[in-house]
Length: 389
Image (cartoon, rainbow, N blue to C red):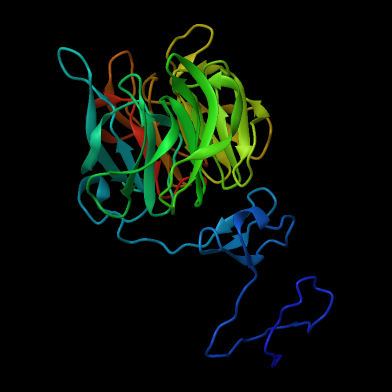
Protein backbone atom coordinates (compact mmCIF):
# COMPACT_ATOMS: atom_id res chain seq x y z
CA UNK A 1 0.00 0.00 0.00
CA UNK A 2 1.33 3.47 -0.86
CA UNK A 3 0.16 6.92 0.14
CA UNK A 4 0.83 10.21 -1.67
CA UNK A 5 -0.46 13.52 -0.33
CA UNK A 6 -0.35 16.27 -3.00
CA UNK A 7 -2.62 19.02 -4.25
CA UNK A 8 -1.98 18.40 -7.97
CA UNK A 9 -0.53 15.76 -10.29
CA UNK A 10 -0.12 17.93 -13.34
CA UNK A 11 3.17 17.24 -15.16
CA UNK A 12 1.91 16.94 -18.73
CA UNK A 13 5.26 15.91 -20.24
CA UNK A 14 5.85 13.14 -17.68
CA UNK A 15 9.33 14.55 -16.99
CA UNK A 16 8.82 15.07 -13.28
CA UNK A 17 6.48 14.75 -10.34
CA UNK A 18 5.79 11.76 -8.10
CA UNK A 19 5.80 8.19 -9.40
CA UNK A 20 3.01 6.03 -8.02
CA UNK A 21 3.59 2.28 -7.99
CA UNK A 22 1.96 -0.72 -6.41
CA UNK A 23 -1.68 -0.84 -5.28
CA UNK A 24 -2.76 2.74 -4.62
CA UNK A 25 -6.05 3.91 -3.15
CA UNK A 26 -7.44 7.42 -3.70
CA UNK A 27 -9.43 8.00 -0.53
CA UNK A 28 -10.26 11.69 -0.87
CA UNK A 29 -13.98 12.53 -0.51
CA UNK A 30 -13.55 15.06 -3.32
CA UNK A 31 -12.47 14.28 -6.93
CA UNK A 32 -9.61 14.12 -9.39
CA UNK A 33 -9.55 15.81 -12.80
CA UNK A 34 -8.29 13.63 -15.69
CA UNK A 35 -6.54 15.11 -18.75
CA UNK A 36 -8.98 16.78 -21.11
CA UNK A 37 -9.25 18.22 -24.62
CA UNK A 38 -11.39 18.23 -27.75
CA UNK A 39 -11.73 15.37 -30.26
CA UNK A 40 -9.15 16.85 -32.64
CA UNK A 41 -6.48 16.89 -29.93
CA UNK A 42 -6.81 13.21 -28.99
CA UNK A 43 -3.30 11.77 -28.55
CA UNK A 44 -2.43 8.61 -30.50
CA UNK A 45 -0.23 5.58 -29.74
CA UNK A 46 -1.20 5.73 -26.07
CA UNK A 47 -1.03 2.79 -23.70
CA UNK A 48 -4.30 0.86 -23.79
CA UNK A 49 -6.54 2.03 -20.95
CA UNK A 50 -5.39 5.68 -21.07
CA UNK A 51 -8.19 7.93 -19.77
CA UNK A 52 -9.21 11.48 -20.75
CA UNK A 53 -12.26 13.79 -20.79
CA UNK A 54 -13.53 14.81 -24.26
CA UNK A 55 -14.68 18.44 -24.14
CA UNK A 56 -16.63 18.09 -27.44
CA UNK A 57 -18.84 15.20 -26.30
CA UNK A 58 -18.64 15.99 -22.54
CA UNK A 59 -17.82 12.29 -21.95
CA UNK A 60 -14.96 10.32 -20.44
CA UNK A 61 -13.14 8.17 -22.99
CA UNK A 62 -10.39 5.57 -22.90
CA UNK A 63 -7.85 4.29 -25.43
CA UNK A 64 -8.71 0.75 -26.57
CA UNK A 65 -5.58 0.14 -28.64
CA UNK A 66 -4.27 1.27 -32.02
CA UNK A 67 -6.89 -0.63 -34.06
CA UNK A 68 -10.00 0.79 -32.39
CA UNK A 69 -8.65 4.03 -30.88
CA UNK A 70 -10.59 6.17 -28.39
CA UNK A 71 -13.92 4.83 -27.07
CA UNK A 72 -16.36 6.84 -25.00
CA UNK A 73 -17.51 5.59 -21.61
CA UNK A 74 -21.28 5.76 -21.41
CA UNK A 75 -23.79 4.35 -18.98
CA UNK A 76 -26.19 1.74 -20.29
CA UNK A 77 -29.72 3.01 -20.76
CA UNK A 78 -32.26 0.59 -19.34
CA UNK A 79 -35.14 2.67 -20.67
CA UNK A 80 -34.58 0.80 -23.95
CA UNK A 81 -36.90 -2.16 -24.42
CA UNK A 82 -39.29 -3.00 -21.62
CA UNK A 83 -42.30 -3.36 -23.91
CA UNK A 84 -43.84 -6.35 -25.69
CA UNK A 85 -42.88 -8.42 -28.73
CA UNK A 86 -39.53 -7.28 -30.09
CA UNK A 87 -39.10 -4.90 -27.12
CA UNK A 88 -39.43 -7.28 -24.17
CA UNK A 89 -35.70 -7.18 -23.32
CA UNK A 90 -33.20 -4.43 -22.64
CA UNK A 91 -30.45 -3.38 -24.99
CA UNK A 92 -29.64 -1.37 -28.10
CA UNK A 93 -32.64 0.08 -29.90
CA UNK A 94 -33.00 0.04 -33.70
CA UNK A 95 -35.23 2.61 -35.41
CA UNK A 96 -36.29 2.55 -39.10
CA UNK A 97 -37.76 5.78 -40.45
CA UNK A 98 -40.02 6.32 -43.46
CA UNK A 99 -39.74 4.26 -46.63
CA UNK A 100 -41.60 3.61 -49.85
CA UNK A 101 -44.69 1.66 -48.81
CA UNK A 102 -46.26 -1.02 -51.00
CA UNK A 103 -49.70 0.46 -51.60
CA UNK A 104 -52.08 0.16 -54.53
CA UNK A 105 -52.25 1.40 -57.24
CA UNK A 106 -48.58 2.43 -56.75
CA UNK A 107 -46.06 2.65 -53.88
CA UNK A 108 -46.16 5.81 -51.76
CA UNK A 109 -43.84 7.42 -49.22
CA UNK A 110 -44.73 6.81 -45.57
CA UNK A 111 -44.14 8.71 -42.33
CA UNK A 112 -44.06 5.49 -40.25
CA UNK A 113 -41.27 4.93 -37.74
CA UNK A 114 -40.60 1.32 -36.66
CA UNK A 115 -38.48 0.27 -33.70
CA UNK A 116 -37.21 -2.89 -32.01
CA UNK A 117 -34.61 -4.04 -29.47
CA UNK A 118 -31.77 -5.75 -31.37
CA UNK A 119 -31.08 -8.37 -28.67
CA UNK A 120 -34.67 -9.72 -28.93
CA UNK A 121 -36.80 -11.21 -31.71
CA UNK A 122 -40.24 -10.24 -32.97
CA UNK A 123 -42.15 -7.86 -35.20
CA UNK A 124 -41.31 -4.16 -35.08
CA UNK A 125 -43.52 -1.74 -33.19
CA UNK A 126 -44.79 1.76 -33.83
CA UNK A 127 -42.41 4.46 -32.57
CA UNK A 128 -44.22 7.50 -33.94
CA UNK A 129 -44.18 9.53 -37.14
CA UNK A 130 -41.86 11.67 -39.23
CA UNK A 131 -42.86 15.29 -39.74
CA UNK A 132 -43.58 14.38 -43.38
CA UNK A 133 -43.68 11.20 -45.49
CA UNK A 134 -40.15 10.43 -46.77
CA UNK A 135 -38.14 7.62 -48.32
CA UNK A 136 -34.71 6.91 -49.75
CA UNK A 137 -32.88 9.66 -47.92
CA UNK A 138 -29.92 8.60 -45.80
CA UNK A 139 -30.07 5.23 -47.54
CA UNK A 140 -27.33 3.38 -45.65
CA UNK A 141 -25.30 3.88 -42.51
CA UNK A 142 -26.30 5.25 -39.14
CA UNK A 143 -26.18 8.87 -37.98
CA UNK A 144 -26.88 8.66 -34.25
CA UNK A 145 -25.39 9.35 -30.85
CA UNK A 146 -26.25 7.33 -27.74
CA UNK A 147 -29.34 9.48 -27.30
CA UNK A 148 -30.37 10.96 -30.67
CA UNK A 149 -31.03 9.60 -34.16
CA UNK A 150 -31.01 11.63 -37.40
CA UNK A 151 -32.30 11.44 -40.98
CA UNK A 152 -30.71 13.69 -43.60
CA UNK A 153 -32.25 14.33 -47.02
CA UNK A 154 -34.96 12.24 -48.68
CA UNK A 155 -37.28 11.68 -51.62
CA UNK A 156 -39.82 12.24 -53.25
CA UNK A 157 -37.95 14.02 -56.05
CA UNK A 158 -36.11 16.30 -56.05
CA UNK A 159 -35.44 15.38 -52.40
CA UNK A 160 -34.98 17.81 -49.55
CA UNK A 161 -32.27 19.20 -47.31
CA UNK A 162 -34.01 18.53 -43.99
CA UNK A 163 -32.21 16.92 -41.05
CA UNK A 164 -34.85 15.25 -38.85
CA UNK A 165 -34.11 14.36 -35.21
CA UNK A 166 -35.69 11.95 -32.74
CA UNK A 167 -34.89 10.99 -29.15
CA UNK A 168 -34.00 7.29 -29.13
CA UNK A 169 -34.99 6.54 -25.51
CA UNK A 170 -38.57 7.75 -26.00
CA UNK A 171 -41.27 7.11 -28.56
CA UNK A 172 -42.96 9.87 -30.50
CA UNK A 173 -42.65 11.97 -33.61
CA UNK A 174 -39.46 13.38 -35.11
CA UNK A 175 -38.78 17.09 -35.44
CA UNK A 176 -36.86 19.33 -37.82
CA UNK A 177 -33.36 19.83 -36.40
CA UNK A 178 -31.33 21.61 -39.08
CA UNK A 179 -30.56 21.65 -42.82
CA UNK A 180 -27.95 20.08 -45.06
CA UNK A 181 -26.17 22.33 -47.55
CA UNK A 182 -27.91 20.77 -50.55
CA UNK A 183 -31.22 19.12 -51.43
CA UNK A 184 -30.36 15.46 -52.01
CA UNK A 185 -31.12 11.81 -51.30
CA UNK A 186 -29.52 8.31 -51.62
CA UNK A 187 -26.52 9.60 -49.61
CA UNK A 188 -24.38 7.31 -47.42
CA UNK A 189 -23.81 8.14 -43.76
CA UNK A 190 -21.91 7.47 -40.59
CA UNK A 191 -21.27 9.10 -37.22
CA UNK A 192 -19.36 8.78 -34.01
CA UNK A 193 -20.74 10.13 -30.74
CA UNK A 194 -19.97 13.73 -31.77
CA UNK A 195 -20.19 14.25 -35.54
CA UNK A 196 -22.65 13.04 -38.17
CA UNK A 197 -21.60 12.85 -41.84
CA UNK A 198 -23.77 12.76 -45.00
CA UNK A 199 -21.71 11.64 -48.01
CA UNK A 200 -22.55 11.96 -51.71
CA UNK A 201 -26.09 11.39 -52.96
CA UNK A 202 -28.32 12.48 -55.81
CA UNK A 203 -28.56 16.25 -56.26
CA UNK A 204 -30.93 16.91 -59.17
CA UNK A 205 -30.06 16.37 -62.01
CA UNK A 206 -26.96 14.26 -61.19
CA UNK A 207 -25.03 12.41 -58.48
CA UNK A 208 -22.88 14.58 -56.24
CA UNK A 209 -19.61 14.33 -54.28
CA UNK A 210 -20.15 16.70 -51.37
CA UNK A 211 -19.73 15.58 -47.73
CA UNK A 212 -21.61 17.53 -45.05
CA UNK A 213 -21.08 17.25 -41.32
CA UNK A 214 -22.82 18.56 -38.22
CA UNK A 215 -22.40 18.30 -34.45
CA UNK A 216 -25.25 16.20 -33.11
CA UNK A 217 -25.42 17.90 -29.71
CA UNK A 218 -25.72 21.37 -31.28
CA UNK A 219 -28.70 22.59 -33.29
CA UNK A 220 -26.97 24.17 -36.29
CA UNK A 221 -26.97 23.56 -40.05
CA UNK A 222 -24.50 21.12 -41.60
CA UNK A 223 -21.29 22.56 -43.05
CA UNK A 224 -18.76 21.44 -45.64
CA UNK A 225 -16.43 18.58 -44.67
CA UNK A 226 -14.87 17.84 -48.07
CA UNK A 227 -15.72 15.68 -51.09
CA UNK A 228 -15.87 12.09 -52.24
CA UNK A 229 -13.40 11.82 -55.15
CA UNK A 230 -16.23 10.73 -57.48
CA UNK A 231 -19.88 11.71 -57.85
CA UNK A 232 -21.77 8.89 -56.15
CA UNK A 233 -24.89 7.60 -54.41
CA UNK A 234 -26.73 4.36 -53.53
CA UNK A 235 -23.71 3.22 -51.44
CA UNK A 236 -23.47 1.25 -48.21
CA UNK A 237 -22.25 3.36 -45.30
CA UNK A 238 -20.47 2.48 -42.07
CA UNK A 239 -17.31 2.74 -40.03
CA UNK A 240 -15.99 2.98 -36.48
CA UNK A 241 -15.22 5.82 -34.05
CA UNK A 242 -12.39 7.03 -36.31
CA UNK A 243 -13.35 6.31 -39.94
CA UNK A 244 -16.50 6.98 -41.97
CA UNK A 245 -16.74 4.76 -45.07
CA UNK A 246 -18.67 4.51 -48.34
CA UNK A 247 -18.71 0.99 -49.80
CA UNK A 248 -19.79 0.31 -53.39
CA UNK A 249 -22.36 2.56 -55.05
CA UNK A 250 -22.73 4.50 -58.28
CA UNK A 251 -19.31 5.14 -59.93
CA UNK A 252 -17.66 3.18 -57.09
CA UNK A 253 -19.23 -0.32 -57.40
CA UNK A 254 -16.25 -2.26 -55.94
CA UNK A 255 -14.44 0.53 -54.09
CA UNK A 256 -14.22 1.42 -50.40
CA UNK A 257 -13.53 5.11 -49.72
CA UNK A 258 -13.55 7.05 -46.51
CA UNK A 259 -12.50 9.93 -44.31
CA UNK A 260 -11.18 10.43 -40.78
CA UNK A 261 -14.17 11.79 -38.84
CA UNK A 262 -12.22 14.13 -36.55
CA UNK A 263 -10.59 16.00 -39.47
CA UNK A 264 -11.83 17.75 -42.61
CA UNK A 265 -10.93 16.79 -46.18
CA UNK A 266 -11.62 14.61 -49.18
CA UNK A 267 -11.97 10.83 -49.21
CA UNK A 268 -9.07 8.40 -49.46
CA UNK A 269 -9.07 4.94 -51.05
CA UNK A 270 -9.37 2.45 -48.19
CA UNK A 271 -9.80 -0.90 -49.99
CA UNK A 272 -12.32 -2.81 -52.07
CA UNK A 273 -15.35 -5.10 -52.03
CA UNK A 274 -15.18 -8.66 -53.35
CA UNK A 275 -18.57 -8.28 -55.06
CA UNK A 276 -19.00 -4.99 -56.93
CA UNK A 277 -22.47 -3.58 -56.27
CA UNK A 278 -24.71 -0.55 -55.97
CA UNK A 279 -28.49 -0.21 -55.52
CA UNK A 280 -28.25 0.82 -51.86
CA UNK A 281 -26.98 -2.34 -50.18
CA UNK A 282 -27.45 -2.37 -46.41
CA UNK A 283 -24.50 -1.22 -44.32
CA UNK A 284 -24.15 -2.25 -40.67
CA UNK A 285 -21.13 -1.67 -38.41
CA UNK A 286 -19.56 -3.06 -35.27
CA UNK A 287 -16.46 -1.47 -33.75
CA UNK A 288 -14.21 -3.55 -36.05
CA UNK A 289 -16.11 -4.40 -39.25
CA UNK A 290 -18.76 -3.21 -41.70
CA UNK A 291 -21.19 -5.75 -43.17
CA UNK A 292 -22.44 -4.95 -46.69
CA UNK A 293 -25.65 -6.84 -47.51
CA UNK A 294 -27.74 -7.11 -50.67
CA UNK A 295 -27.80 -4.56 -53.48
CA UNK A 296 -27.45 -4.97 -57.25
CA UNK A 297 -24.36 -6.87 -58.39
CA UNK A 298 -22.33 -5.35 -61.24
CA UNK A 299 -22.14 -5.64 -64.19
CA UNK A 300 -25.22 -7.93 -64.27
CA UNK A 301 -27.37 -5.55 -62.17
CA UNK A 302 -29.01 -8.61 -60.60
CA UNK A 303 -30.24 -8.46 -57.01
CA UNK A 304 -28.16 -10.37 -54.49
CA UNK A 305 -28.48 -11.80 -50.99
CA UNK A 306 -24.71 -11.85 -50.51
CA UNK A 307 -23.22 -10.36 -47.32
CA UNK A 308 -19.55 -9.50 -47.14
CA UNK A 309 -17.40 -8.23 -44.29
CA UNK A 310 -14.90 -5.37 -44.47
CA UNK A 311 -12.44 -4.87 -41.58
CA UNK A 312 -12.74 -1.14 -40.98
CA UNK A 313 -9.11 -0.45 -40.04
CA UNK A 314 -7.57 -2.72 -42.68
CA UNK A 315 -7.33 -0.83 -46.01
CA UNK A 316 -7.92 -4.30 -47.46
CA UNK A 317 -10.43 -6.37 -49.41
CA UNK A 318 -13.79 -7.48 -48.02
CA UNK A 319 -14.42 -11.20 -47.54
CA UNK A 320 -17.48 -13.42 -47.88
CA UNK A 321 -19.59 -13.42 -44.71
CA UNK A 322 -22.99 -14.97 -45.44
CA UNK A 323 -26.36 -14.53 -47.16
CA UNK A 324 -29.67 -12.82 -46.50
CA UNK A 325 -32.89 -14.83 -46.35
CA UNK A 326 -33.85 -13.25 -49.69
CA UNK A 327 -31.96 -11.35 -52.43
CA UNK A 328 -32.93 -7.69 -52.29
CA UNK A 329 -31.76 -4.11 -52.83
CA UNK A 330 -32.78 -0.43 -52.63
CA UNK A 331 -32.87 0.43 -49.00
CA UNK A 332 -32.14 -2.34 -46.49
CA UNK A 333 -32.16 -0.53 -43.16
CA UNK A 334 -29.03 -1.78 -41.34
CA UNK A 335 -28.80 -1.54 -37.52
CA UNK A 336 -26.39 -3.28 -35.15
CA UNK A 337 -25.35 -3.55 -31.51
CA UNK A 338 -21.77 -4.93 -31.92
CA UNK A 339 -23.18 -8.46 -31.46
CA UNK A 340 -25.97 -8.63 -34.05
CA UNK A 341 -26.49 -6.96 -37.41
CA UNK A 342 -30.09 -6.55 -38.61
CA UNK A 343 -31.40 -5.58 -42.06
CA UNK A 344 -35.01 -4.47 -42.58
CA UNK A 345 -37.05 -4.01 -45.75
CA UNK A 346 -35.88 -3.82 -49.35
CA UNK A 347 -36.94 -4.65 -52.89
CA UNK A 348 -37.07 -8.11 -54.45
CA UNK A 349 -38.53 -6.68 -57.05
CA UNK A 350 -41.51 -5.90 -54.81
CA UNK A 351 -41.17 -4.25 -51.42
CA UNK A 352 -40.80 -6.63 -48.46
CA UNK A 353 -41.35 -6.48 -44.70
CA UNK A 354 -38.48 -8.85 -43.87
CA UNK A 355 -36.08 -8.17 -40.98
CA UNK A 356 -33.02 -10.49 -41.05
CA UNK A 357 -30.23 -10.84 -38.52
CA UNK A 358 -26.72 -12.31 -38.36
CA UNK A 359 -24.06 -12.45 -35.64
CA UNK A 360 -21.03 -10.22 -36.28
CA UNK A 361 -18.72 -12.89 -34.86
CA UNK A 362 -19.87 -15.89 -36.92
CA UNK A 363 -21.58 -14.98 -40.21
CA UNK A 364 -23.45 -17.58 -42.23
CA UNK A 365 -27.04 -17.57 -43.42
CA UNK A 366 -29.20 -14.83 -41.90
CA UNK A 367 -32.14 -15.77 -39.69
CA UNK A 368 -35.62 -14.26 -39.49
CA UNK A 369 -35.92 -11.56 -36.80
CA UNK A 370 -39.53 -10.55 -37.48
CA UNK A 371 -41.50 -8.22 -39.76
CA UNK A 372 -41.82 -4.49 -40.28
CA UNK A 373 -45.13 -2.71 -39.64
CA UNK A 374 -45.71 -2.65 -43.39
CA UNK A 375 -44.14 -3.80 -46.66
CA UNK A 376 -41.60 -1.15 -47.73
CA UNK A 377 -38.10 -0.25 -48.91
CA UNK A 378 -35.85 2.78 -48.55
CA UNK A 379 -36.10 3.01 -44.75
CA UNK A 380 -33.56 5.19 -42.94
CA UNK A 381 -32.06 3.20 -40.04
CA UNK A 382 -30.38 4.37 -36.81
CA UNK A 383 -29.35 2.73 -33.54
CA UNK A 384 -27.80 3.83 -30.26
CA UNK A 385 -25.15 1.08 -30.37
CA UNK A 386 -23.61 1.19 -33.86
CA UNK A 387 -19.93 0.85 -34.77
CA UNK A 388 -19.15 4.53 -34.32
CA UNK A 389 -20.15 4.53 -30.64
